[in-house]
Length: 303
Image 1 (cartoon, rainbow, N blue to C red):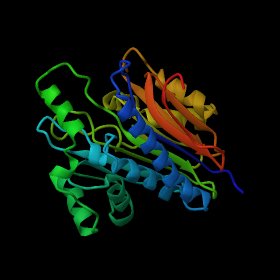
Image 2: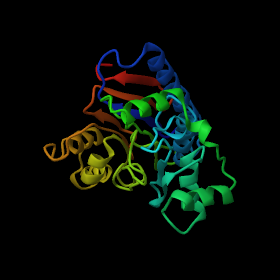
Image 3: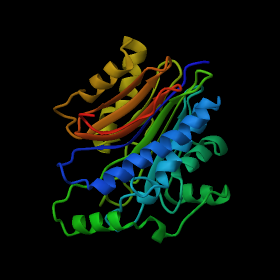
Image 4: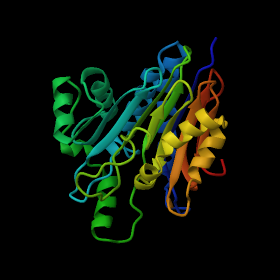
């Protein structure tokens, strides 16, 4: 049987001990395990990497404990505007959406952009109209207003100095046919300005995949990740310098660190099934499974 592997993340953040309740931590670990299983089953039975990464991200988008889909952070106006991208390493086909409202699974809309439109990225009402045309599930605003995100939004609006949520969810996979794929989705930064676009839907920013090198999904401070084009940096270091994928991620994390200060995390997988989970924060929600090895779920740096 050919090598296959799956790596997923649910966001990298710097957090004070005690800031994450035991209940929330348990819920996030459970959510990671469920999402990993959803994607792994597809790979295990010989399905395509593209289907696996979409399945993982859909699972995390439906889980209110992650900042994507249902659990998305709220903009300054108290609305949900989501970003997502998916990329096929076989042919560099990709689809992305930015600042889209109401869509239950932005990652599936990104895939529709890739497969059913002549474009790579659609935003706002244009993206929403495609979702409606394609019969994708849309939800009322109330679906996206969770207790947690409303509380965080209130604290930010009242300027109580809370750390704005800027997590992302993502997955990278290698299937049994040797194809790589990546999917990334986010609700953005809690309290962000209307119309902001993060790194997730930017190819080469937060999302990139190519069969001749690796697949990469980033999380953390989107502005910093975009300015460093960090997903493409990892790709280029693997492809042109021949760095092992974990070393390439470490180098990308440290790229011009003086100018690119902030939370950064990334997951990657190369064409041989080597995996990387690198981050400069004390917390990155993450999980992986290589072939039919044991699944691994971790959150804190020292795990």
